[in-house]
Length: 349
Image 1 (cartoon, rainbow, N blue to C red):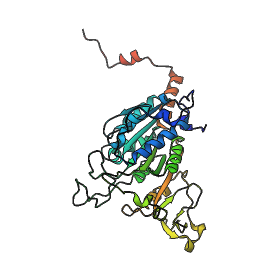
Image 2: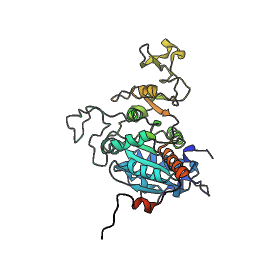
Image 3: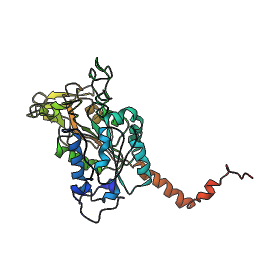
Image 4: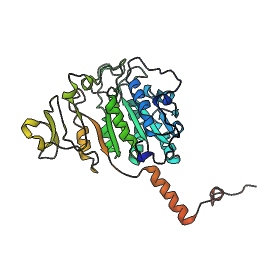
């Protein structure tokens, strides 16, 4: 069994579980062909690797198509309120270090009404695994544009085309000093499973953006990254220690220019030694942020997938528990009734 440091306080299961043990008795109610089915299947197939009892795993969601997730998991969970899943999960993580807590959210839920909750959970490094399904649209409410919809997107709420500039979730997470940031795709089972493994092994907040297809309201949003004829030309896979290169024959790569920026270059012209090697463990998030800015939001050219950042920093819960332990060691345990009957209370006859 793989050892997962972030789950070291979570009791192990006495029995070996399988994917079917994490499937609830609820009918899965997403549109036929929705990418959510693939994500659900991957998560249910991956969880047995953790060796945890179902009772020690929690899924908390907000509002949206993705937020049906807790109903379909045979674990504890909560379908909470719009945008507030990270806040609710923070309270649980701070008080119950014996649980493995996963947040399931969408691009609208997480980045619109829930934007503040998301960035503060990330900067605090709360021990949460946040799966953000990004289909670049509001699916549950019938196809309005979302915070990740590209400029010019025509929807019922933007009939002449959106004039907004879209959020880049990976850039946003890196700017919030998240200690783990990754991106994967709903249709790539192997890549998604490996990304989930690394997220689970991380202590603290882990954001995994999952490009997910909404075949009803935004079908084909990520098609260039999925089509066998185009994906190798537009998508680069980030692997630690390896030169960042892509293309059908690996003919394109990422270099650093004399002015400090990064750009795409032809490997034949610059040579492989000039290529940047990926390092998700670098303390400075500069390269990870620069990589997150490479992708063209309309054509999806130069899109990186994989783990952008994975660094060690004590989680919020660990630091809070350490503070409490230090006080107990120095002053002993406090008395709750004495606190209630403190200087700011009085008797009323």
